[in-house]
Image (cartoon, rainbow, N blue to C red):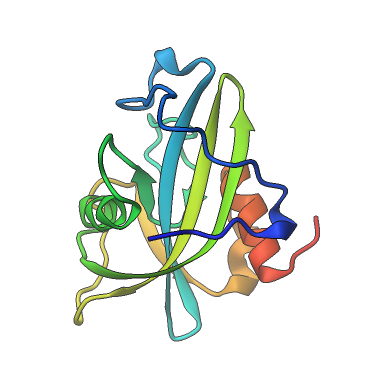
Amino acid sequence: MACPTTPWATTRPAPDSTEPRLRGYDAGMAARHVRVVAAVIAQDERYLITQRRPAAVLGGLWEFPGGKVEEGETDAAALLREVRERVGVDVNVGACIARRTHDYDGYSVDLALYQATIVGNAAPSPVRVADCKWVKSTEFEKFTFPAADQATMDLLLGFKR
């Protein structure tokens, strides 16, 4: 599933396949690149967001549900797995709506956002996250997001900070 690099997102291309991949977020992340996918799930003009556990990297911050793409995994497979693990629902993965690379201290994240819908009438609940909520886009400013998520959301929604 190809994901367009949006011209307005000040992006960098993803690294080639020879770059080392991480097994998880840990102290060995120095100068590493992490591929991450996130689901933009909308229902009744509200979006599903999740809060990272306090002990996690960037703990307590809010984000669209998703996570790291494992070695040999497609974006779609990773998104299905991560959403199920984090909020206990299956999703239909739609189009990639944005891709952005953001540099953090010691590592960079290549974040791809995909439209997604929940399969059936399942209700998300916090499984491997501290919390999850349905919020209107006008409420996003009440929540603190990681820099990569915030910048991409702002661009998608036309916010200027």
